Amino acid sequence: MIHIKSERELDHIRESCRLVVEAFRMAEGLIAEGITTQEIDKAVEVFIKKAGGRPAFKGYRVGKAVFPASSCISVESEVVHGIPGRRKLQKGEIVSVDVGVEYEGYFGDGAKTYAVGPIDDLRARLMRVTLEALYKGIAKAVKGNRLQDISSAIQVHAESNGFSVVRELVGHGTGRKLHEDPQIPNYGKPNAGPRLRTGMVLAIEPMVNAGKEDVRTQHDEWTVVAKDGLPSAHFEHTVVVREGEAEILTKGLC
Ligand code: MG
Picture 1 (tube, helix red, strand yellow):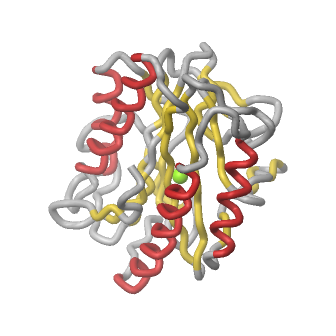
Picture 2 (cartoon, rainbow, N blue to C red):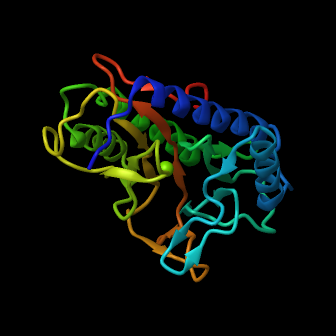
């Protein structure tokens, strides 16, 4: 069931999303050659807690697997859900950071891919197209459209640029819980799926692979990687469906 949020609830979710954006602003300053992903994660955690929030990913469970960190940090061919660790960022790599915040009982979610120093054309194009695909999807998140209008817009943009969308992982509703209905695939057919209504809060998050769409999960039970080893990018906004134009609650992130 897809919850419709009241304006009062949206005010709360907007606050959680503001903390997400601020955490990214802080983390952004740290991303450079030589830093470890766990150093970035630690800074994100300290920042969120100081602001009175709770890192929503820490302790998140899927079956028996418990996510151990406050952010997901996924480097190069890692698509999403990378566990921060001792890996040092290298010049020329791309790194995707995903942060969720719970603040006073409400959730916000966002993700962004960064370049570590100068990157090659493939990676630059992959990042640009993935961000564009996110905005193509957001443009469809308006009252009266249907859910897969978002999915289709993302897929068409990624694939028409020669890239592929990951199918095993999806965007989602958010707000009262981190993950709510509906699931938002990054592929689909126009004019299909549930009708969008004002007050639906959606975390739209294209995951785009430079190569083939196939992914696998590593032995750590979390890190999803592109099977062909080619780079992958990920951008995410939390938005609320409105009439005419969606409102981006994580505005300023990307
Ligand atoms: Mg998300």
